[in-house]
Image 1 (cartoon, rainbow, N blue to C red):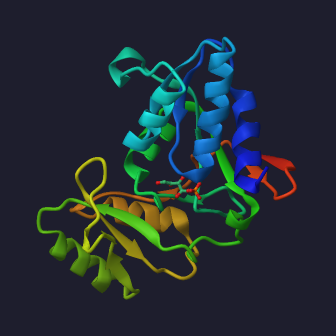
Image 2 (cartoon, rainbow, N blue to C red; image 1 turned 180 degrees about the vertical axis):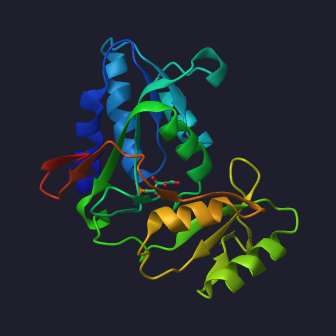
Length: 224
Ligand SMILES: O=C(CO)[C@H](O)[C@H](O)COP(=O)(O)O
């Protein structure tokens, strides 16, 4: 058992019969999907929506029934990883590039459980570069505007020497803010910029954090 597995497996305990569940993305969410899949194999009756093509494939491997958003108004529960979690349960997400679908699923869920190994718990967000999803059209102008506004290093994400393309066909810029002293303010500012589709700050969205440790222990932190 490793820390990510401990967190992912523990969070699967909150999944109950009849629920519509949002499945996150990343190496911690992998374990949650694995455990949920095992429980589905043992008779648990749920339906799910995945936040990425990769998680959708994983869910299919485990025969977790998948539905389309048009079939439900709201999810009961979403479980997803994070790149950083601060002391107010604000998050940085999007290291895996799935931030847009992840935020859509999280805000449309009655309960959002974050799963994180202990290294993700930080006093302030910002050490992890903040992913910002950009519309490909004229992205150079949006990038220039971001650099002028914040005067911090911001680089376009690449993969195999090409610009990284999200499941939604957009690009990602990673911004090295250092310390983000007011995540709520930055979140609103970025959201208001034309050319920015979404960003990886999740403020006042998480209801609970399940923290995993190397020895298999977990700690559950609930919203104050
Ligand atoms: O936001 C995400 C993907 O877009 C992931 O939840 C985040 O990157 C954490 O990943 P991991 O569990 O692999 O450390």
